[in-house]
Amino acid sequence: MEEQLTIPKHVGIIMDGNGRWAIQHGLTRSQGHRAGADNLKKLCIHMKEVGVSYISLYAFSTENFKREKKEVKFLMDLFVTLFTKEFQTILDQNIKVVFSGRRDPLPKKVLDAMDVISSRSSECDGCVLNICLNYGGQSEIVDMVKKTCLLYQQGKVSLDEIDTNYVQANLYQNLPPLDLVIRTSGECRISNFMLYQSSYTEFYFVKTYFPDFSESAFDQAILEFNQRTRKFGG
Ligand code: IPE
Ligand code: IPE
Ligand code: MG
Image 1 (tube, rainbow, N blue to C red):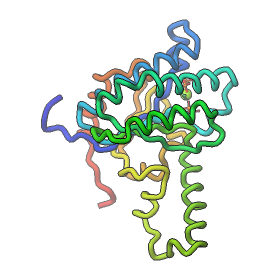
Image 2 (cartoon, rainbow, N blue to C red; image 1 turned 90 degrees about the vertical axis):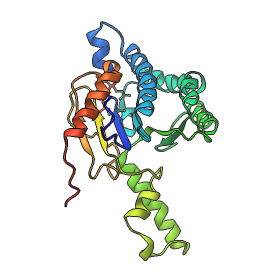
Image 3 (tube, rainbow, N blue to C red; image 1 turned 60 degrees about the vertical axis):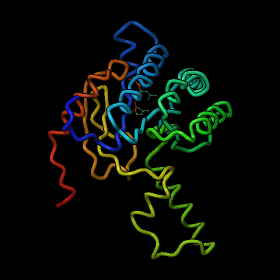
């Protein structure tokens, strides 16, 4: 890409459309998720190479537990395979993997796999990959409020200390605000993704289904981002 482009520091991706991609290709939803996972690995490496410092991927929402048991099971098994076997390419790129979301009610094998990849990548400092798994933006705020109430009760935080910096630092991960959020598959909604962090994000909605959202499609999003004038209320 051209050198003078501004690269967003924190990019979020709502990876949507695996199911419709599968239907389009006469495949099962599981195969769609498998194709999405293959794309995710390629895309993260590309984003890091382009110079993105923080990547947040929406992998599974708190609401996704409403899906058929069979699909949920496939996705949980896929996460285990990714984090224990397939993320070597991510480690090779010096990418640190962290997670956002509630641990309960994720199966133990998924939690163990998350812990393995988190600790294996804890020293990596090339870029941060924040995987939102069993994640809900509303639950994240609820959990931050509960944690703060407890700290307040214990006299460990005072009202004066609670400001926007405090809130950011006490969400699941202390990440900078999102500069760009990309949602694939044509839906123009946020679906409970990083509500606090997206206050001044630029949104990029694209019709492409996630498994087809290539490196060059990402570069297009960066070009579009560079056309936007950010004002932050000023
Ligand atoms: C996104 O693809 C992946 C997850 C939500 C886990 P979908 O499974 O939502 O695909 P569509 O929206 O049905 O096409
Ligand atoms: C959002 O996609 C969640 C993820 C990409 C993980 P959904 O497919 O669950 O969102 P809705 O149901 O279309 O809003
Ligand atoms: Mg969807």
